Length: 69
Picture (tube, rainbow, N blue to C red):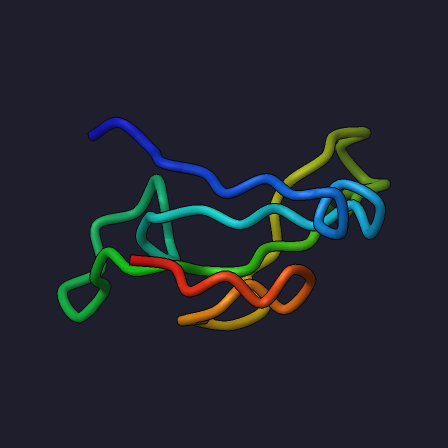
């Protein structure tokens, strides 16, 4: 599946990722579904890597207020 992203000045400034994807991208969870979601980058200090932490499902961009379809 190709991920669709929404980028605006506010999301970039606040370092948030808005993607049309599942919540658990690499896991096969039976009740997971594709929708617009807000993610926050987090650092895993134990492994020295970054990952995207799910914040919530969204219908509008919280930064520019554009409806996400």
